[in-house]
Image 1 (cartoon, one colour):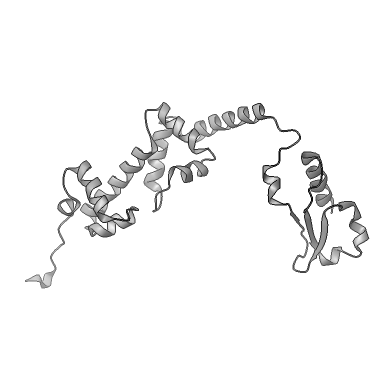
Image 2: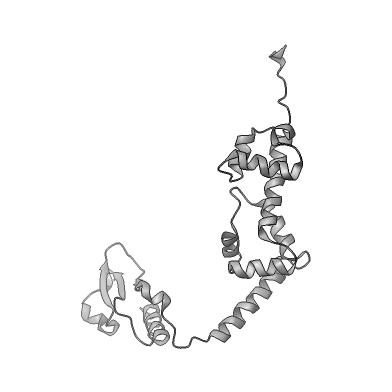
Length: 204
């Protein structure tokens, strides 16, 4: 109950009020009488028969876009920039952002992430990630294409995978688009680059 009281007062402090539509779900055994929790008004207090020792605090979705009383855009911007610098030093102190992403993509499972997905994983905005790469003369599309080509070469030459299977695994909905992209980089069609099937002993 002390934790509940703290969260409730923090909510009131940040928003200036308890928003209409706020709901607090408490274990049923806590609700000896509803009068015990009159101090939570105007939040609606309801019993949760499945809860044993915890409570839930539900807020209307509109609260996500509500401005906090102590909001400071300049301080927020400074904090984001500071976090970005710390993140840069933590993850790629030597090779730069592009090299770190290149190594990360080599270890990533398929399907490879889009720019927004990777930015979210790094707790950056897509625009910030683009800017950081541009400062190094790189772009995510090129890094992604490089990794796709590397994997395609390995799958075709080392494993002898069918061209269509390789295309679909790398995220191409049309194998013809994969063939054109591969040909531009390798100078040959993927079917020509692919390792010939190993003949079996029964082939004779």
